[in-house]
Length: 416
Image (cartoon, rainbow, N blue to C red):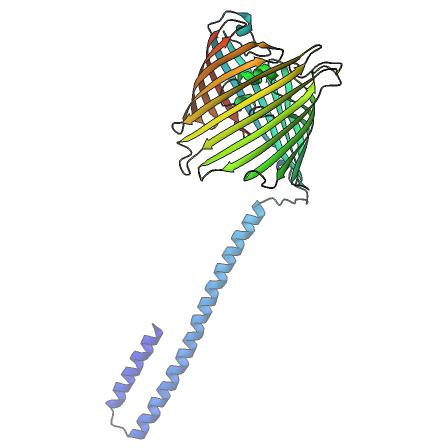
């Protein structure tokens, strides 16, 4: 605004001069004087503008400083040591429930009552509540504990620590664990592809699994016979009381498993495994039992659509020799199941079973099971299963089972 006023003043002065009858020398001197005065006024105005801008900046800085001071005063300062926070040390904790009800057509006690080889029928059952704790102990080891609350009270289902990435591509674990015999022996009950374990596993190990307290080593081998080769060697003190004794200081079992993994294409892989287990059958360690197993698994999961379509086919055969006082019992059995995903929440499956019993190979059990799974979410599922059980030593049974499983925490329904 001041500059416009000065320009107007100069214009008026020039007009006035032109209107005067003066000589040229006087005009030049008057113009020079006016220009000097204008230049002095512009410098003065520039200084005033700079002072105004500086005043505004100072006021803004003072306002911001006052706001920061108020924030600092309202906060309580916290000082932390170099130790890790306690919450970072907590393990992953999960809790799961496995409930079921079953109805069977047979009235025999072998079918209706819960036992070493039967889950029972005729009422509602709590199979187990499982509390799982998992955590890395340090960069080199990890720990896992699974506590089962069921019909036998509180049982340590698994509890071990594991050293990782040791020389020879080895992982080493020590504690209570399920052995790597075949494919399904390591599965917890809530993670099984069907409600019950295949009949051959029930016959040789009961409704439990082959495991115990001991040491196990897993080796990642060079690709010798497949794309990936693994070898598990385990030595445990345990036994199930059926094939191997569990009642003396001679209850040691040695288990070995060799796995071959093949990638057939982007969506399909194949696993072929061989297992062996040996241990004593009596408390005096005079007699021994030996088992051999071969398992085959084929899985198909199309990339990008594995949530909607998928197929799993698994077959396993077990052969056993059990020494008695005057003879050796040879028995065998096997199972094969096919499971197909028909949508994001539904799976259908079928399993065929046959087995002889290791105590007496004359006793036979065979059957077929059909099932439908409904996964409400990854934390909750319902299972509907029908099983036909044909025995030559007891009544046949048509069994209908409804199972529900839920899980809270990061463990979910873990498989192996």
